[in-house]
Image (tube, rainbow, N blue to C red; front, side, top):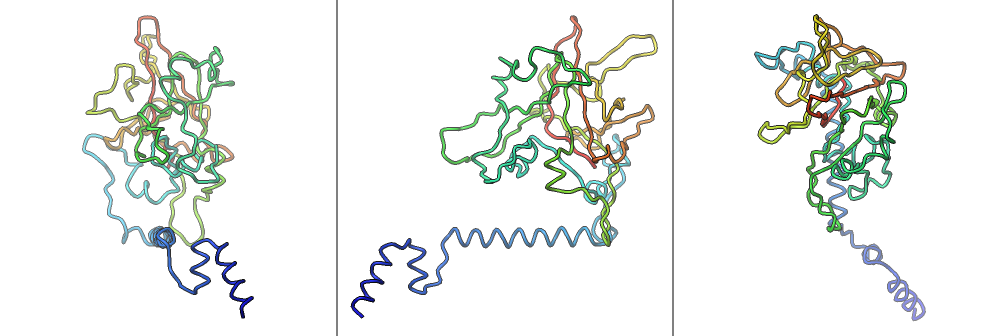
Length: 314
């Protein structure tokens, strides 16, 4: 018995506090245990809610109007289309789990650490020197430059933990660098989310290829002079041969001819014909959309840039 007591005493001296509780048979939960348990319950309830919603008759689950506003009628983009399709939101905005996990930037963060993820390039540093991105060459349709992810809001990097998570990061399209591109959804988004548009026994609508570009929201609606405005700044050739505008966009090789705005939140649905058609189809053979952009300015025109918060595919 004496040797047993010494052995128990020696074991306890080597145990962590949580092990000591188990040894004593005391079923106590730490604060972290309780938080993790509650988080798991919330995740499970959320998954159940989503499953229930997607599998119910839309007539019983959603009341929606065919037009969002009196002035902007975009009948292909109803509330039902937004909520019952496999929508992809490729966003630069924070907070975003897809940003933290490196899905948007294809820099997968397996640690899922919100203090350690790819944040992009600081805008002021990029403006001072962009040679690493553009290599002092103009991007072409066959060899375009990447659209870059920039941040400019002040970060307090002196803190060990992030305390402010709300940042308006942007995908930045710079003028006069030639063609730039992005691919939506990217391979990480396809791999992790999957894009089976219609699954057996559910009512999810198939993807129709409605493509929205959401521009950065300006404080009080007052955007800087160098910000591209849609749809007025699309490059257009008029009947007399003159050209106006700055921005050209192609989707999988097809030119964008204009845009419609379903809401007042800065998102613009891209058109591909003079009749205002918004349906781009299901993408290429991988279900992806190659988005090419080019901003050109003449000597007598001010320099313009495009600040994008999100690409959305319906």
